[in-house]
Length: 179
Image 1 (cartoon, rainbow, N blue to C red):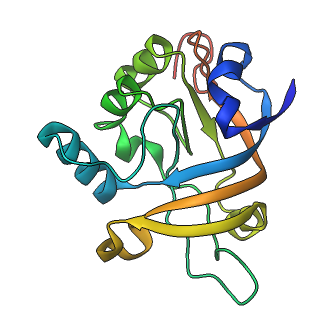
Image 2 (cartoon, helix red, strand yellow):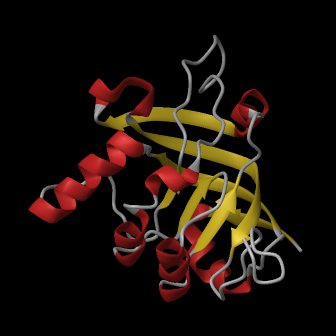
C-alpha cells in the first residue's frame, strides 16, 4: 500500500501500516543522532527540559549538511539506526511514534516498537541530496555545539519512506525467521 501521511497523524495510521508499505511523510520531524540521543537520555533521567515533546514525535537519524543557496538543507540522508538502539526503547516508551533511518534494529527496539504501537521507517541510503528536496524548512533547536549532529526541526513534504518494522512485529529484515 501507499500512504500520504502528516506526521501529526502518524500515531493513528501506525496500526494500519505494514512492512513494505510506502509512506510519503509530511510535517515536523526532528533530527537526532548518537550524541544528541545521549544528551536527551541524560535530560530524561535528570528531569531536565527536553528539546522537543517526545509524545508522538518522529525522529530522523540524520545530520543534514549545510544548505546551498535557496535550499532548506544540503544532503540529508539517513545514518545507521543501530547506533541509536541503546536509546530507542526508552524514547519509544516516552511516546516517540516513529524513527527514520537505515538498517536493522535489535530485539529490544523491535519489542518497544510493538509495545508502543510505533513504526520504524527506512529512507534510502546514499540519496541524501535527492531526499533534501523533500525538506522545506530546517531550524536548529538544541545542542548547537554538536554541529551537523545538533537537534534540528525539519519540515518534510512528501518525504519517501518504506515501513521496515511495523507495530504488529513485521520486520523487513527477517526472512524465514532469520535476520
